[in-house]
Image 1: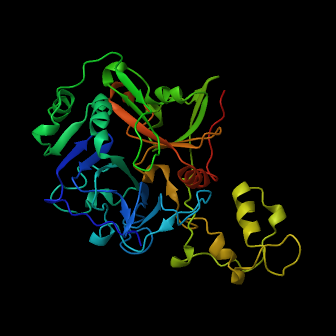
Image 2 (image 1 turned 90 degrees about the horizontal axis):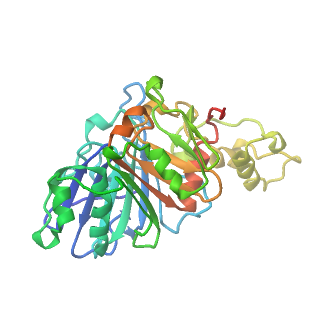
Image 3 (image 1 turned 45 degrees about the vertical axis):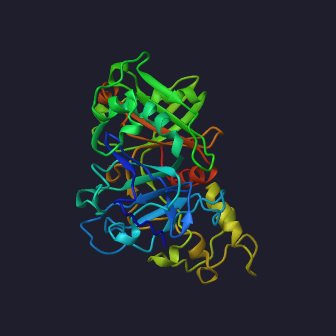
Length: 384
């Protein structure tokens, strides 16, 4: 169970809650070792994928409050593509987020307006219908000023803060009171910020005055090939895919599937006949098939359902899957070698050029494998 309890009270030295196209909460405490956690385990990071609601369901997997997660725990292999399905709904108090005592800061990134409330935890009902990602990072306590300098380039709206005067630099005051950043160029790229566990973060921020496409800015990672996931409606507002010699950014269409390592918790298909591994063409399917080829069956045959084939290979959502238009999150995955995953605030449409916003990327094998597996059954358009 992903136990995330939050007590936002006297224990918090100060908290800044930011309302952007991307919503960010950062808190600093005087006595923390790590902020993000699973039960009693300290975590460097975690990612929650809150599932969307299907047909006003109030129970079951698609009741709008179930979620799957991955995290920095050493309990799961970095090469595994699997997510863990939570035992709790996200609106249960023992399932909410955060933290452990110590000396660090928590940065929680998501697209849910005014969440979490600074007084108490509650799950906003308006966020139930759509799928959402919540990305939690544990940062060094002394990284606060560096974080502020970066996030100021996104021109955020602060909906709550209680920053003490001892932390009030000119940049912090400009951020808190909406004075804005006057600087050239009107964008900022940084790769110097690291989590407590040493994970390097690639941060991209731009002001509206830059008239830049955020996805072009990400090309600074170098010769990158990206696929990005976001809502696909209102196609007339979408920018064309980028197909250049140095940067390829293409929109993902279709359904994504999260591979679960505990599918026995949910209703799944019964595989009543063996599946011939030699007929599989998908790389991930072949990989999973071979792992359970340890029983005495005919050559080139996978185990039958009673030999745990159905437990090993359960494509998440054999019924409804997560569709573009049911998901409020916006993320990218790099496909040409560096295993970088990014989570951002701006859609790839014309009006984002006129907006301030940002994106955070991390080069992490476990995260990359989980999201790479999720897009195996999607499609993109060809570059022309």
